[in-house]
Image (cartoon, rainbow, N blue to C red):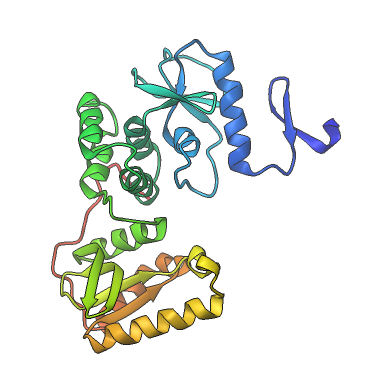
Length: 277
């Protein structure tokens, strides 16, 4: 019944309590059905279609390419120029490389870098593919953002939290290595991030980490983590754990690093002039 639904677009209604990103995906389908053949979604809309990590709140507009500039209504945002695309789940979607480039031009540096890391980690495209798209965008507005994202992307990053942690510590003047492996006899540990000093390990603790892995209880997961940290400390590592909410407090992150004995070794990572939070 319409009383239980909300209007998505002209003639299309969806459940009022639908997930916001699922709603956005349905809007993308409706939008493409009205545009000329060959029109494809890109940017955040395409990132969702590729099942990449996206911001919690979807944009109000569906981002599209391969149509002429013009007025198409408040639900459509047009990116100028032609892009390669593929069909995915019945939708024409910009290739991963074009998706990353347009996310870089539309999202915050954190969210754009999260998308780029995920694309490279899942091997949906290569760094060479990203650079090829960047070259085609030469002279376009926002290309400096695209270049910055490519230069700072890391295929070894395994989660949005790791990406954001890496970005923050680099902005604080630290250099880091992702997924550093520590081996000591029969002990093996893989660190999310290791500072350039070779002793300060950074671990991002997301919700997924504490869901029952391989049949283990949450309690067993926590005990294993404590035992792992103790062994790393015996080997001379200082292990710092961060939660998503703590990453909003950049000064707090800096104080924790310095309290652990770490000191910046590089110039702080800067953003392009037109790139803001």
